[in-house]
Image (tube, rainbow, N blue to C red; front, side):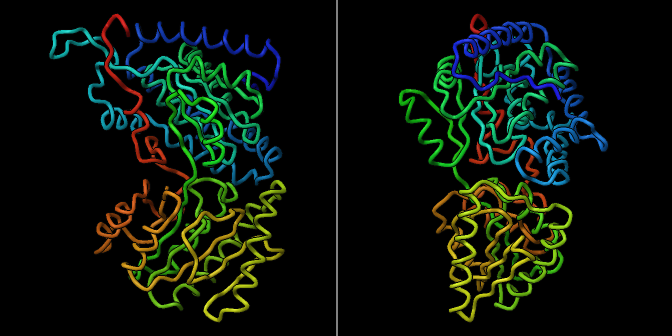
Length: 441
């Protein structure tokens, strides 16, 4: 698989290559601003994404096989996950995103006259730099789409732990539409390569950093005078309301636990089950059955030492706690391939991932909302185990959003957010756009 990457290097030549690619991207952007309309950009992006999302995509299969070997994840799981990433990029999803987040879509194509009589144009910044986390693949793909819709160049630094996808998609796009492909520069360098990092930070008009709070804060602190959009730690969970059927949702909830080995901000690490305690116990057993099924389909591979150490520490604490408390329940798969711990005293903190989940029995909705409000880490997604035609569905969704969750979806869909979703709830495309006088465009 061809890789459009600036390879990790401390040498001056790597920096010069990056600068050259960025200069070429800016030249392509000038042409794009002068010649491309929204429909042409949408059509090119939809065609490129379609090459990855089609049922028997060799691109997706090859990338999944490479990442499986590189990141110790199941190739079958990765192929399904990548299919979800690219299937979200369609003509209709992009057209809806433009309608929802763009105040004047034709003004992206040409100048218009504002109320002050000035010739102005709507567009994004000249260059957006995304420093991506290494926990899940494909994070850069929605960023590429939104940058190009905004007529911005897009520089992406993929983590060495999740390489190739940004560059491979840019290659596909370049084959479909060379001009748009030239506006994307996919890079990869080690976290300690300050030469490459500082170059990217200097030339970017907008910077978005992804990772844990510690990682983001550490990088941002090196550039104290710079405005940075930070995408830090988040926690995601499931909710089984008192009126919901526990058995119906186990398969989808198990997928939300296992996908990407539970390492993303949209991975489910806790499950709240409303009602009597026996409902939580039943949910634990049903979830265990489905996690065993996924273990056969998506065998769990060992991760790095720090992650596996954290996992073993979690299991050890759960063993001690459940042995001393009759209201707890610990269920484990073969060779601890998955672990479910029912703990009525659990806090809403991020878990260790790696197919480990806590189930928290909660008495009623008031207790649920109190627990959600107590979270020390912002909530990203909530998998709501409830049919959308249920009598209290809308009220429940509003309750969850009132606790500042940014995504509510059905079980099994946590890792397939809409194209425009951003973990902090802000607009992914709309926040890029601003009005510029015609001579500045």
